[in-house]
Length: 142
Ligand code: TYD
Image 1 (cartoon, rainbow, N blue to C red):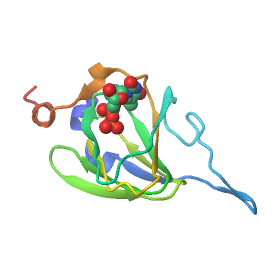
Image 2 (cartoon, rainbow, N blue to C red; image 1 turned 180 degrees about the horizontal axis):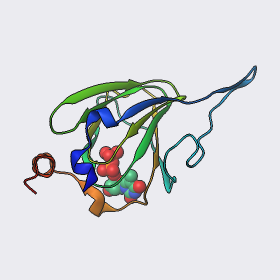
Image 3 (cartoon, protein in one colour; image 1 turned 45 degrees about the vertical axis):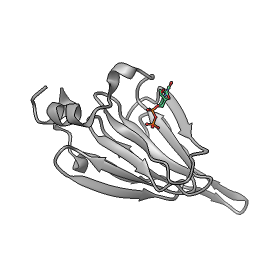
């Protein structure tokens, strides 16, 4: 499975274009134009209580673009070998998380909205929710 070998360096930060007008900005995502997969699902996290953490899982197959539609939060990426913290705080910046990355989301500002564009429908079988199982998967023991 390809996602087994994916590394943090396969994830990227994308500066999305902004259509600027005097009355505000618009940012557009279009399948296979400025997002490199077909979007099958959009979901968003909101009303996250202060001090709460989310995520704590990896996916076998799912690609995601994550955007701070409002406010800010941190994403800690972990590929089983190294970790990297990325802060998102602008609606025109996307983080592309490739399959096979463990991620934690934390440090949510009040009123923050985590917008997620996903390449697949929701499927619990695509999740790895146990960190030791994740490490076994990445280190070819599973
Ligand atoms: P989960 O992905 O664990 O949330 P997070 O990574 O933000 O902490 O999902 C939390 C709950 O929501 C879990 O019971 C599954 C459900 N859920 C859906 O039903 N559909 C979805 O598309 C998503 C993302 C979650």
